[in-house]
Length: 252
Ligand code: BT5
Image 1 (cartoon, rainbow, N blue to C red):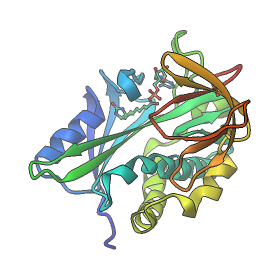
Image 2 (cartoon, rainbow, N blue to C red; image 1 turned 180 degrees about the vertical axis):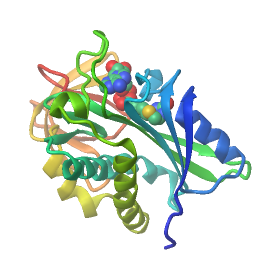
Image 3 (tube, rainbow, N blue to C red; image 1 turned 135 degrees about the horizontal axis):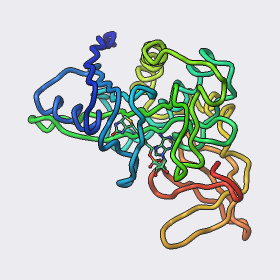
Image 4 (cartoon, helix red, strand yellow; image 1 turned 90 degrees about the vertical axis):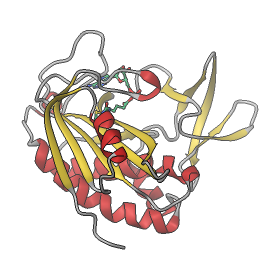
């Protein structure tokens, strides 16, 4: 497989790096283009939620990818991303960075990073994936309505260079991304994910609006679904996007 040629497009302010990435895809841009911004005026989370980004303090990046695999496999790339970004941050910081299934990164029970995968098509109906990453790097404080947000700076007292984090992540991600396109499942990095995942072997609340169910998380399938066991002994695999998962007493 060919090495990805990363090209960084930097913006000071933008509505959303994912939105610009989608426009660039329509214009025929190559895989490996990365849009980064200092701040976003309309940063997006999943399911229409907002992503806050105080100017200059967070890594806001959207990586344009064109994986040569079936659409139904693509959501597993969130597991690949969370694993490689978690390991990157563990290497670059002294923090105990963990993954909240499927793709939030947390430190000391608070959210430090969110990942948003969006599928889009170019003008020839070819599928592209936009891998959006919002990482709170040097953010000194958060508004009161984000009690579960934190930054690398708040947890460590140290400032980090966003570019270094991005470069290290892209290098590491590329290796696993290539393997994933061959295996088409996450079995090859399941152990690494499980080692860092705080959602496993816990009592969790599964939120399938409007219902909430209590279950025990017992493992992960090779496709990255969470295996849960209900009090009546029933076992189920839940997919990314199908449910929200919460710990019983806190954010994680
Ligand atoms: C996510 O959504 O966690 C995915 C966030 C992805 C953001 C990146 S930034 C670059 C790229 N361009 C975009 O426009 N988006 C991507 P979700 O799991 O739905 O979490 C959203 C929730 O996290 C919000 O409803 C808030 O509760 C919380 N939140 C918002 N901003 C936060 C922040 N800076 N740090 C921690 N939590 C935050």
